[in-house]
Length: 289
Image 1: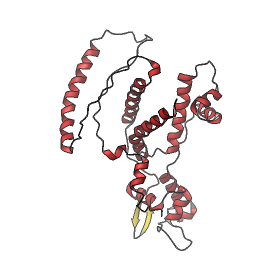
Image 2: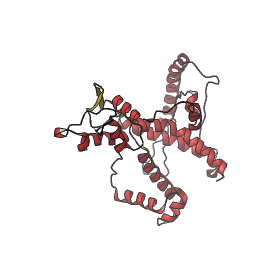
Image 3: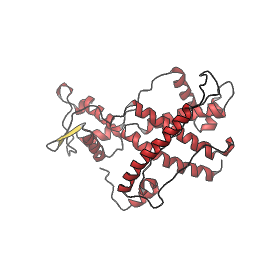
Image 4: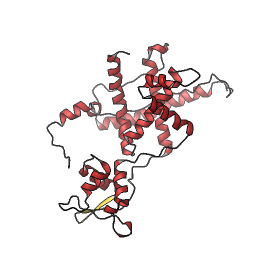
């Protein structure tokens, strides 16, 4: 694969990841969690589509994926042993765990101390707590996160931990599973349609959009319009599926298929890159307290 193609794919990957990473951060899924999942998917896809020998050649998989042989072995071993990985604690969770368990930051009966943000004396304080349990995370940002989540409250210029866990907004398993289904089906079609090595004309993949953009009021009008017209089309397609003959479930050539319709809304800044963001903020002093 040429370097130019790789560069384009990386830019496309970055754009696709933005809404997903936003959701992952909001739900406390760390980069370590994501990285381990990505390794598992790379190994699976390499074995399923690019390495079809009877035995598993870890060296070959390592070459295909860019992982080390040790990483490939670890992924395979974890999968074969069906062990449940203990989730990596997020930084806020590590800070709260230290606050509730470290004798330096607890009082009688293990109750967390009320901490000042900083202290000139050698006394427990929030900045030292964050430095010890969260590394290079800015203490002020950490404090804001814990206050926002309700895990910490402010009491007379001191901070009190009132909950040991760091609460993220809850999502139902059904919605999470649907996210995986939608993402997989959309990207499988998009990837097939640009991968000319598979041949064929590709699957239906069309888009319509407002050339000049829309106001919020117009977006609301379009939302109402597409919910009615889109539902009518989906019901028509459902009737078409229902008219097909009933198949034997044991037939090996049966494949699942269907159609997704999605109304998307985006602002111009959502397509900006990290380089654009840093350029916009280069003259802004960052709070590294």
